Image (cartoon, rainbow, N blue to C red; front, side, top):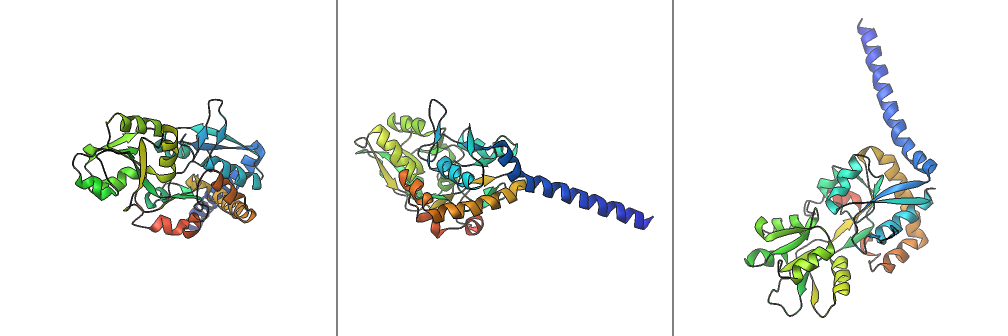
Length: 282
């Protein structure tokens, strides 16, 4: 009876392991067979851009397209959502990969399987040029009781502000860049915190005569990476290998430079350190 029970348990264990292994190992083959991968995107230029015709561009999608091409996957399809909805959507199977600048943090590393970092940037505040508000750090925001700060919904900026002591009542989540600029323009927020490259892009659209970007002195450099479901680690590993080839070819630097990113910045960071860094908020 004991041996029979042991045999059943061992057989069941092998069956479960084999099923899980085949599912994971087959994910790349399935994408190759379909001929496309579904990318989760948040329409935030220049990280990711979806135009009125549904055409996809931006640093994240263009880089993912190049890497996937090396993996034998020729096409991409975009699924657009808010920044904070991309990881939940990935986890319920609405997309295969997030390629839209979701920063690597210890908390997120518990939820998804990140590739190595690809897009890094420093945080900035957008302020009205010539206005009364002068902040250069989250600590400045915390100690200025009249300053209301706008932050991307679901982004790292809210946690950076909270860690610096900014009360929740003075932190205003905004759904997208244009909404944040309108809130700033109309005086409903005093400063708008977001990645520096996003800040400069928005100022270029709104006019640099009216707004200025100030680097956040107490914020860490944040790095994003392509994100995969936890049970797709083998697909992530294949992506990492292809990503290394794209870097060697010079295509990585070309894509990042085209969108205003510094291709050298990500070389200072790796996934393992970012996933363990206690100073890396969120």
